Amino acid sequence: MSRTRTTLLPAATVLAALLLSACGSTTPSSADGTGQPGKSGASAASLQGTVTVLAAASLTESFDQLKKDFEAANPGVTVDTSYGSSATLVQQANNGAPASVLALAGTAAADPLDKSMVKDSKNFATNVLEIAVPPGNPAKVATLGDLARPDVKVVLCADTVPCGKAAQKIFTKAGITPNVVSKEVDVKATLAKVKLGEADAAVVYHSDVVSAKDAVEGVEIPAADNTTLDYPVITLTDDAATKAFVAYVLSARGQATVQSFGFGAP
Image 1 (tube, rainbow, N blue to C red):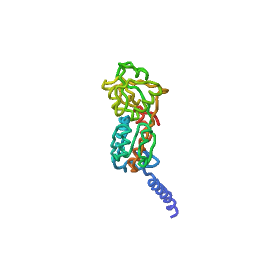
Image 2: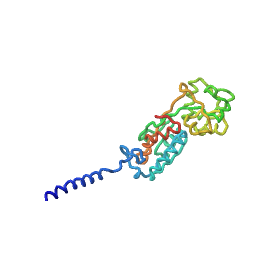
Image 3: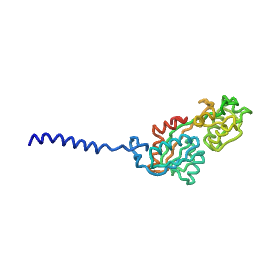
Image 4: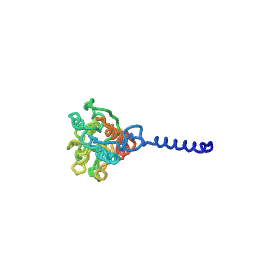
């Protein structure tokens, strides 16, 4: 009998260890909503609902890609994106427009936002300004000072939107008065004037020049004359899908996506 017990006890011990191991091998929840292991947050399979994102026009291409990737990893979630000038988006949110997330061009753009709506806010990217010109640069724009030439038709963003305010800051610091023929509602409308051949130059974000690919060429504005904008992502609702989307934007994978479109690290 003793020999039988001696043989069975180790087997029972091994079986118990295997059962304990199986119980402890649960799939970690995802901190960024992509099914990747994380410290906290709902698992990708459990996420449901709609995340409504109002994002600055300069984020169009990068957030289209974030939306695509996040939805692919979270089949139960729909990300609705709407783009426009940051000033307009903040006004819409203040007036009660449905919004889970705001992503703005510059922290100053969030100043008018009703702070009682804000659950969290973190910077996720930076951007600088750049001169966009048509392919071949027919007006031979080489410096910021060339934008003051009377033969160079310049388009800027409206003074009320971040890209317009940033451009004015640059021109004031440089002591330059550009030959402005038009001011547009947001940075995409501004860039479109160059793409359509209706302007010789436009001051837009570096990310917009990158996203436009061969449709325009970029003329760098030196760092000494340039200005940097910090981009905040602002959480407006507490639901799990929204938190997961914001976590994804802030994750290493989300950051890599945003930076691939010409943005800098926060």
